[in-house]
Image (cartoon, rainbow, N blue to C red):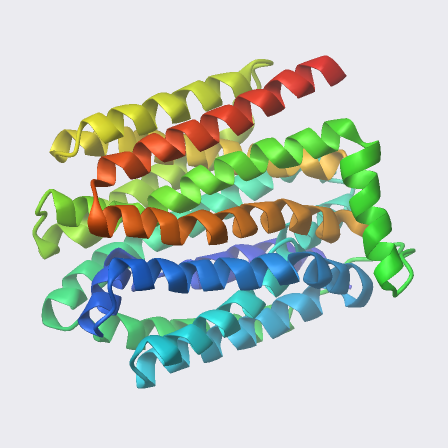
Length: 382
């Protein structure tokens, strides 16, 4: 088995999957097809809910049948979802596309990090995980940043053109994922629902440290996922010319990519509490500054996103075992997605009928309370 090639293939897969030309203008694309922001957030809630309910079963699937197979099937379904965006129009059609994207996303989520970690574990390089995951996440963000500039320029000509190109690019994730080599694993879990429950029980009722790392990680995930979807409404609110959408999106993702690449350098014992405070303060000041100056606080949130994502994945990996790693990582994503599925339509409604500032204040409260509680519990368990 040529496991050495796995890491570079995962870098390439991340670059392809995150070459999201459509993201800087996705809200405008949906609005062009007649959707309100509430409907757009319902679509995103649908995606998140689909990922959420399938997160644990898909992670279990990856642990039992292989991470490579899970990534392969996920790539196929993601491609089909964007085919629907490319050739159909309307809320109902997009609703179906989001469900397919959700299934695909759930198959990929957890399996990617688990495959990287177990590959390094078999190569006896598991101490490099944070560095490799940080580089992987960084490559994804830089890829998304470059794609953002291209997407923003293409959108001036047509809001549909970025979607067509996005679909074409995503096709290449299928052969890349198929070419991966499955690392050896003990695969001791029995193929049953009972085994899933045993992993859930162990994670949330027996391993307090792992539980609170997952809760903290989920809190950060809700904040960073929400800001990703509210950057465009924010830019609309401050009347930003379309020309700058791709440039701003690119800048934000490149910033995340750089901090992610060097995330392994951030090892302060109080890092988590500092991250929480910066995130909360940024959301509060963002709410106060619905102007071009507010972009400063969005930048802070994206900086934090780059540091915290690979750091927390490493902490979760360290505190879980190989045969259940993808399932545990999927538990983290489950909490993020189910929470976002609940709050996204509410946040969209607030923006449609009230003031976007209240969205950022709400996120400050949600992220602040949950993350600081998690840090407190982790301190107790140390």
